[in-house]
Image (cartoon, rainbow, N blue to C red):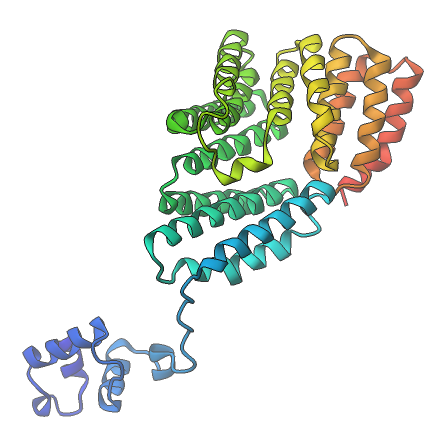
Length: 377
């Protein structure tokens, strides 16, 4: 660069030596000298064949990132609580953009500021949780690429938090992403590939979570059990479910991470029911799903559980109960903006398709059409 600058001058012999110019270039590139004189701005522009405005981008300089304060973590957690409440009642579409803006404009700038180590770890932990929620909301609205990109950002944040349970949670979410794509796949080979990827991510999560507190370890292990159930391997699934309840038996022996406050026994039973449905074990799935319903009172989680329970009744040839639960699901699905719930409605109809001669089944199919049409808008 020093030689290029010298050659760009009208009278190179009047320029400093290349050795001296090299020292100038090093200082400029290191930021030791903030402003380059007009003479050298012109020479740089000539050497690089660019305009001064394009090269030096004069104008307002970006603001320095704000240094995080103690109140920032609580503010993020407060926003996350409100976000989760809205998501669980109405679905991700209505508030996704606001959540994305808050992540970009409020949270991420603070991650670049300076803070004491303990505060910095708490900030990154809360930011990981927030990013995972926004990722799930994007998945719920068919923005798969955006959801995947956010999972990558969450992985980096979790690493900075130094909380292994958060890293495991990101991995399990990545596995859930693959399971969702498996449900959408239109070819058996493609579906099988997604399932194998899900198995790799969720088993990786279980490995990372081996030292995590028992409830979070139990929760994370359900995701691996789900992946196993999609392979049709009953023994592998039962083995993982056994690990879920072994861990749950130890709940209370260690403090749980903050993010586990949103999950508990009802969620574990729901995931167990999903495993049994995937394996065609309808009666077992009915018992687990019915155990989950009393505590899954928010609209969106309850809709998911009703869908699983309806499919489980269909597998157990309890058609009247399957249709009754299916009608409850449709009532909630009409109030919630969620493509994944619409997918669950479709799965209920598939489970009952062989029984369309039954009047209550045909009635359910007819009632589902406007709900599914709303999903496609």
